[in-house]
Length: 214
Image (cartoon, rainbow, N blue to C red; front, side, top):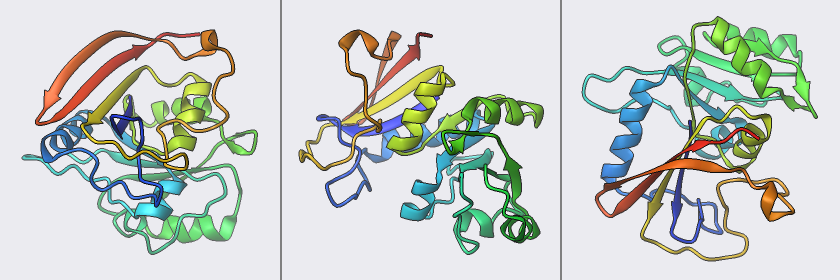
């Protein structure tokens, strides 16, 4: 599941990179309810470096999913919250760089390092999904940034998209959007979505779609 929170004009952050909070409390609570239903949450290293998240489930009777970080070059700081809490919540770092010293440092702190083959210098997401499956992880909530979302769509691993839309407009050519990369060239190259469902949480709207395979 690829989850996105954005403004009415499709921005996921201001031109300064600020995104807290785009949506209101009710929508954010529903995200935590979704987290509770998934085996894992996956983000990219960019989100770790920018936000230093914990990726915990803050609901009644919480059940924290595993955390998966796509970190091709093992940039994750040893003092970030995800590493510091790895002995309490299963935490996996997927990389395609064999840095034995950094791997040993992470593993000594309880992090499980998954060495995955690369695709254009980045973690091969299809291979990562297969590896996670062998570990009993059968559902992943993708809460990454634009780069990881683009890679996930390109690799074909996204089955469902959740888009939370807030009644706000950020504007700005340099303000971030949900999916990065070059984007498609022709209209008929778009990733096609189907079976839309609409929910409302306070002033925010949630659109849910299934992704059609290309």
